[in-house]
Length: 406
Image (cartoon, rainbow, N blue to C red; front, side):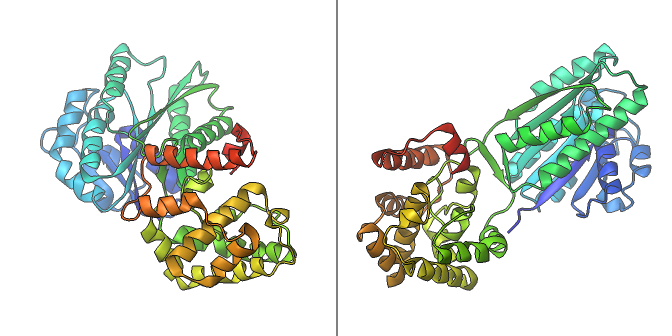
């Protein structure tokens, strides 16, 4: 199940970012534009007025804030119930603003507080003032950055030393943030590594138009260490992956040699039995999720079919078929599903390739996470330590390259 994401364009820059998303044929309808300036809303490419929120309708009567941050704050507070009614249907808010002016700088903390109250994750894409802008705007931006306390992820761009006319500069910044957001939306997980990669990709794409850009990534309130937000969850993440790779995996197992990367979603194990983002993303988070996996007809039938093929390989040494780490991940998978289903097929694999021994880490996790999820950094650190000790017991050295890819 893909989580529900809303994109908010706040103030002049935010509205322009949404305009460029529409120009780029952004297909979803989950965006809204918020501004005190009625003219800005009317001139936007968002023709559905239900997607407009006129901030400060009473206090500002459709006029701009004139770079007054307090007016931006008051105007946003006037419409906070309208904003909450929008946000309550979503899981993640991505918000785009230009810091330094009144609406974005004053309104952003108010909206972030509302999102936190409703339980949303938040990602803020911000632009800082250009060097040529007046001191008041730079001072506002500094205050605004200090007021951002409830943004889970903050990406801040600044362009410097640009030899272009000012309106061209603003246009390129709007496009760049639009490009960044669209690429973020394509990911399955928002992690520190992925965010940095997308920022570098964005900078590379726009290096001809914007000569110098530096990035600032602030990651706060994360529950899973470097893994910040999953953009897809539930059994759909397994189903979509298997529809792409299951036949290839089955063919490799029947041939007696695993050659590609699919272990995480074909023979799933508990999250933490591996250090890569895939190991977390496709990792089983609880006993309930493992039971749901097995009760899903498509996933169960595939698991049984490929496990049968695994059992029928003409060798007693599974380490000749898969890598040493995959060897232990398969033992974990067999242990997990035998204990949940009592299907003797899984025990037969353990008997043939593992001398009938269960994976002790999986047994421990079945007990420890019987009625709760693996959901904190402490949980992952605990499981990572167990996993690393298991590999080292078998003289397998865990280095940074292994942690990135397994």
